[in-house]
Length: 212
Image (cartoon, rainbow, N blue to C red; front, side):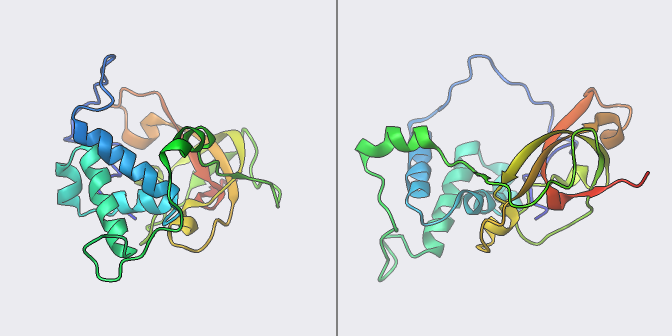
């Protein structure tokens, strides 16, 4: 989807100024919002890409006016309501799994690997020129808007991974080859940019070959 989160190259938002001593959490509620989101993610009520989609599909005015963890919390509320997991809903159901406190370290250490065994040959190889497809899906996608239609070069082949577009839609993992693609920044944003290049991980359905 073309949502408010897709801000690469958008003007008017100012530069990103990371701080070396930036705190992970600025308020106690942020820590709790993060913990609740992880706990419910481990419950199996939704997958990672559905959680990302919920955050990125928030109304633009709400998304752009919210802090990082406010966005997480707003999305968590919507996911809970959509699946009947809120206490205030009559007949609310229990999640498929419950993450117990004693299991948290092991669950966090295991993470959620997305790589899957190869089932087909990769279409592209390192060094190949590729073009990011021009696409405007109504659902979730990880292809940034500012890349679409531009030519880059494959720098690495990363194996087959869960395809987020179908995973978020509830249509299964449908693993696809994943590539790291380098794009020249000036071709994306013109001569005024201060960046040299942009490296983006792109799933195979996002790319098409460039004719010689």
